[in-house]
Image (cartoon, rainbow over all chains, first blue to last red):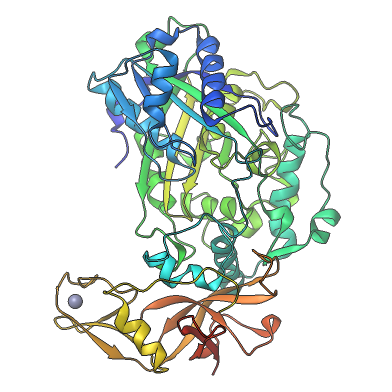
Amino acid sequence: MGIAPRLSGQYAVVGVGESDLGIVGPEYTELSLQVQASLRALDDCGLKIHDVDGVFVQPGPFERMPGLLLAEYLGIQPRVNDTTMVGGCSNLQHIEHAIAALETGQCQVALIAYGSTQRSARTRKIGGVPEDPRSPRGQFDVPYGLLSPIGPYALATTRYRHLYGLEDEELGEVAVATRQWANLNPLAYHYEHPLTMEQYLKSPWISWPLRRDDICLVTDGGGAIVVTSMKRARDLAKRPVSVLGISSRSNAHYWIPGIDDLLTTGASITGPEAMAAGGVTYDDIDILEIYDAFTTMPLLAVENLGFCRRGEGRFFFRHSRTGPGGEMPMNTSGGGLSYCHPGMFGIFLVIEAVRQLRGECGPRQVKNPEIVLCHAYGGVLSAESTTVLGKE
Amino acid sequence: MNGHPIAEPTPLTMPFWNGLEKRQLIIQRCNTCHRYQFYPRNFCIHCESRVLTWEPVSSRGHIYSYTITMRAPGPDVAVPYVVAIVELEEGPRMLSNIVDCDPFQIEVGAAVVADFRRENPNESMLLVFRPA
Ligand SMILES: [Zn+2]
């Protein structure tokens, strides 16, 4: 259902921050990256650690109870401690949960944090995370060697090619435009590395029909955002960014063979719901921030969110339409493909959206954006969340 | 069979694995609504009935989608190989490998038929599919 329309604009993202990104080295932990990002996000809005009474953090491979650990390290006793883990959209779902907790008075200031050392700790493998061999997936999927998580997205891409046609260059447009944004972002992993269509088309197949350059980065990094009431937000350091609408859901599958239709995702529900809550129409949206672990994800997202009809997503990115100077800027940080991808990218969509709405983005700043739509997937199209943010 | 991690059957799923040993594809069917389901569960995913029986199926289906794995996930794995979602004539879908084919000649919608492979004598038989 998402948040009710009466809550639109009542809550705000007031502080954002990343930790160090890229390859941070073995001295960092998930916790230390969460903390570094959290302190930067609190400094960004001028709130103190002890103002935080709600902690929202998703578990990584090294932390079973990361909310308790983060609270202990920060020296706080939060009234709300939420470690919802539904993959890469978890931190967006945390915003929705934070608003519920703020609205019911369970907490006053919510800190949402993420940290991953997957690059330095080498926890990411192309075959995926080990699964219990007795589980449904362990018995019926793992023995077939589907790469993970690229394989499920490759299956969706093949299905799309079959039904609607899809030229290699049409996915390449996503990779190339996203790289152009990264080339404007000094924090991006690929800041100094241009990507041409010719280079893209020469990059090797990993799980056909997806190539190396269709795949996101594998980096370390963390992020944090601070959410509070609009009333309180108005007294803080920077102009607040309003949560106009947010809607999340889990779909009916955990692993990919369980999906009803490889090309239909919950975005077709969460997108319209989040926009309706804020009274926002498609024409109102100035920037898209869409989780791009693979180039196929923005393609499926723009169709399911309703920015174009089914089968027309392949044309959506043509002529660098989503790149710098294009009419529908998307993934203006350089995205998971070219900025950073520490395992779960959701929080970075929001960090970039907030900075764009504040006008803090320097050479990559989009001119006077009013409304940004963020959409993240979790699992393998298994869960999702759409968040619509606006200038106060 | 192919260098990938191997499955561990459970009491619930054992009839499926025992079927493969006899080169038969056996899946669950609901006694109430008569629909088939895969993977095995202790209730019917369609109508919530708790009464299911194991039935042999046609072993025929078609490719709902597929990918050609070009980068080996481990040192003992030979590439390329095809991983597909196969839709059985009876309805359920399952992940599998498509064998005995040129990976680059496969198509979505192509008819396939079940086959049974055991690479290693101490491993269970694995269900795969080949072009029909
Ligand atoms: Zn039934």
